[in-house]
Image (cartoon, rainbow, N blue to C red; front, side):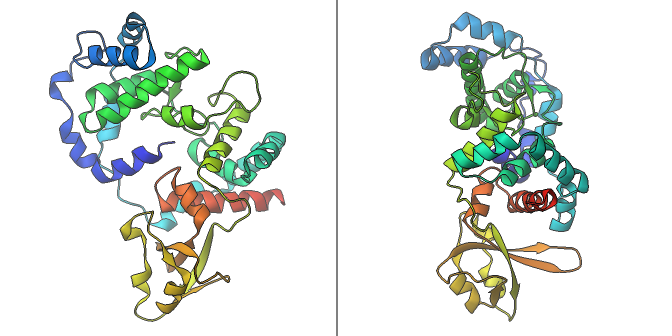
Length: 336
């Protein structure tokens, strides 16, 4: 779940490229000679009771990866318009694979809906967008990614050192070799791409085999993604987004995204500004209001509570809408 990471990168990556420490460029491994290692080892001892020598030995086997620093510092690509972004994720193959994954794991998905109140298609769409149902879970060793970014990437060193701490805690808890786990260049892991702190907070042992395995166990991944949404107050069966039409000269005053993802406006106020929802909504309903470039025309959307919940997974309205629309198409294709 590269949610917090990706949004920050879009805003700061160009400047961050200038902030890499040239003095550390020659370091290849995280031995005691690296100035950040000794303080980190002491923090792991004091905060979590780790044996200092054990931590030193692990870090000495972590490798500094220039490719990771280059990837995270690369100037952000232009922001794609909606009609281009949507085509990346909404494909016949991704829909068909979603149906196949549903058929294969129907029992786990049904149980997740019963336990957590999250519809199967939403879980599928998250896993489908994040890793193509587990096919693209990332090839970087997590300890390399988090050590590289935590020790040699000053713009977000504190964040990634925190994730490295969480990673070592979770591997100790789950009795997993920390040198064996792989993920994204930013340390996101498994089918749902949880960062380590999200793993500790939301991963569940859904098949009750004693391990919270989001890397290789799709049942645990399904339960964990559902738990994430439940903890962020997903409302089962409620509408996610509603298309609207606009008229007059004042409709643009209703847009909320320029004030952030937390900003809301009432449907009643939008109606006064020239917005007409495609389905009936109560005037006191609080929504996000935004415009998408659909290529040959503009689309106008109202995002309700559940759309905001999806943005807690990745801080992007386009991401949330892709998940929502992919979910609907998977359910439709399966004949639900």
